[in-house]
Length: 304
Image (tube, rainbow, N blue to C red; front, side):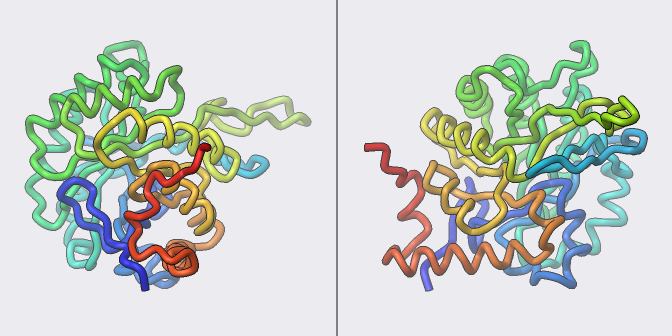
């Protein structure tokens, strides 16, 4: 077997396969289908400082080669996570990582401070695709200076591995990646969902209550792959790739493009055991091509 171990900052992964926030619950929901301890890291659903009810139904819609969602970060807040969820997941022998969201910088700071005290949570993933209520709903991650400001402030209070998740709904992903690196991020994950919509032709109404939502699944893979390749060349910190990864071959492609690790999202809804299959597929790929370590293929894309 090849060596699949990889480091993301000080975070040590037994393999580069992670789950994407919002697609794997808190991990326990999938324990009947896959050995959670085989997964390199589990990123639990988005957590905010206060309870959020989420958007009205319908908030999910199937599209060709993908799905739209407008769940709206429904969760019971960080204190509920600390008191009720953390005790049930803290002893799972893998990296349990919390996705942190907010509508203002103080909300991000408060949530990160609280999670920083949880000894069995070694990292957070900062979701800067959230709407900044003080800037008319503009996402924190769409301008380099806004991205820098939120990451810089969270970095002051969060002392463990800080992963920053980027939005693809921008014109220059590389400049935003560089800004969050300069602000102190240990790693960058991308992409979050693309903005899309779906319409019922018969009723002439949108399929989502919010009209627009986030597109994920196989349809977004070419865009995600391109952005991961661009960002991997623009920064010096590890990149985590996600967006349309449905099997081990997709995972290999992201790693060849420069990702040190990958996240599996929508595929979990289709095959809840897919993460374990991707781990096996990566191991087999490395063996067949006579590579001894996952490090050997990171950024190995041949553009000549």
